[in-house]
Length: 445
Image (cartoon, rainbow, N blue to C red; front, top):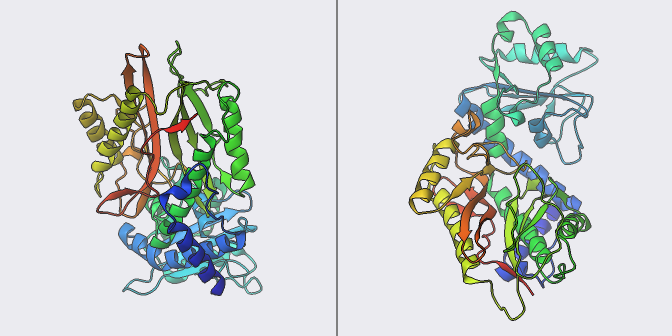
């Protein structure tokens, strides 16, 4: 695959650049062409099908997994299993994964007129059996699975992709002994979505470098003229910059201001209004891009220098350090098997013991911005999150370490929130940030 080799060599060159490559004055890291991204997607899919899928099937104790979707109403899991040249399901797309046991390779079949990429092979002859649902039933019956997993879940939206109509069709077509073997594929769906392979993680650093560069550019004098530029103009700059680079975004960005003048902390349930950026402001952004099929979610902070200043005031640098400390406390408690609620409770308890006022709302990230896996607090549920917070941490998973710590500033005679977010990876032994994290406030002259 010479083109894929070229793509990988390009990434090696990009990732070997010094960290300063994300500085405000340098050009953005090279953006891969759509063809290069497609080649990565298809290579990853083949690798995941032979490494991730078998391990998940055996961990869950399930020998058959069905994924069924109609065009324009796709299961969020099924879309990640389609080849790069497919924009979505075609008519009714039926995928079947079967584990014959005894260490044999999985069967990955498509009850379709054609192969679905290189992974799912055609297993339906419409001339012999015109009814697609009957053909699927025959495929299932001939393998006599013990458990038939389908994507139905009361608590995890990403694992609830089977529509009511398709579930009813299965109940209609499958004979009673097989219909009774239908179980939730929740554990499979979450595991598939949350697990990162090494090849994906290498590219994830490149994706994060691009996101970090865009934010550094936005929080600079290339974008902001104090006394003139508004926060809403910076929001739209972030959106336009992603579009100009051919990237997607998965939520509308936020840029907000905290300042010494009497100003209430805005509620998380509302968007902050447009504000003219002034010297002495503490700026904060929340921004996420979609690139190479992976998502980022980043919250960085900047300070607008007053005339004569060359650095941020010590009290703001101290507040920034307190925010970083809460991040360190949380990531220090990561452990395989611990639930999101356990991580939340441990972090809040230690933070308070250290005199901090933390609020934690960390989430998995990957194929989706708010990804599959354990929820580690919500901003309005600091006592724990039912069900989703009870899901455990597994190795080879990525998270947005998202939180804030409330800090009282006597110099401003008020409290501020130091809001932070960086994407990182748990390999089963240690937690590390995918492309580092912000270590000091951006400075805007």
